Length: 394
Image 1 (spheres, rainbow, N blue to C red):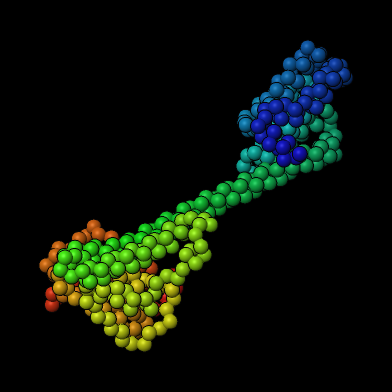
Image 2: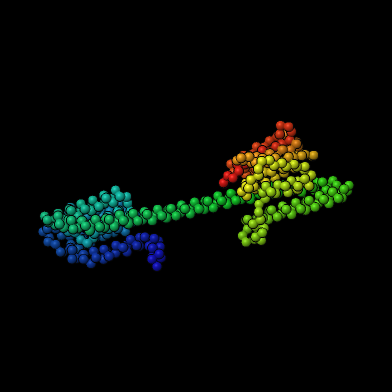
């Protein structure tokens, strides 16, 4: 209920301001005749009800805008009260408007303006006490307690409002940062999936294209070789579909079996299978491992596998006929060095800067603080040298 009331008050601020000072309006209007005739005419300027009514309206009407323009409202009310004192007109309940306006300044303006409003209110109180008689110390101190209490209440309201505003701003900023982090994470995940799909599709489709070309040439002369090529195409296609299904399954919710969605990523142990697959595709590949193999995290194993796979796929696509390739993996004290060399026509081919294969290899290596160098081999062909620090957390 209180929450709905606060929400309603935020939507109807002007009406709330009017209702808040309505008791003061009611008190001032009901006692208008009493205060107009309550004091001796020889001591105060007598203006009667006809004069006190517009004075009351002039003092209370500006309070309607005390929330939006607190300093202007306080200045107007204080000037009217000062003019009333100069004209020697008796005080009335409507003069309490200066305290309401002072509260508005204390609750909505800076500390300097709040202190200035309090000093002006105290000065007005002192002038009113001097107008009433000679003994002003005790009445002034007693009334000042009331004024200071209202002023402190306004300062507390201002502090609490600023604190709540800061909490709301902090919550909004945290929500914005959370959304930004979610978008960054989603973009990184999309980039990772796109890189994985590129590697999977590029490798497997290249193998299938090479086998399909071989089957077309051997269709009439060597049916057995044709059947072997078709079986390789079928197996490679199934493998590509399985890997793509696993990757695309990341983008779906509650789709596929857990075995498909949580299948392990390929690693160093699968390099032998990759080499055998390429040998069956007509690419002679030799692999040599030196040093002491280490138990690497899954991410680093995937990076090593994909770099070797991409380099061999490029050899298969661009190396030309009768190309041979060699993969050397050297485990050192703090890094693994991958060297993939072929003897194809890569040395004579211009480097393509717009391809995604080399970019993907460099991105994978850089995730673990490594580097990739690719270019024509001095003795002919093309080489890729990747250095990946071992056991580096991402």
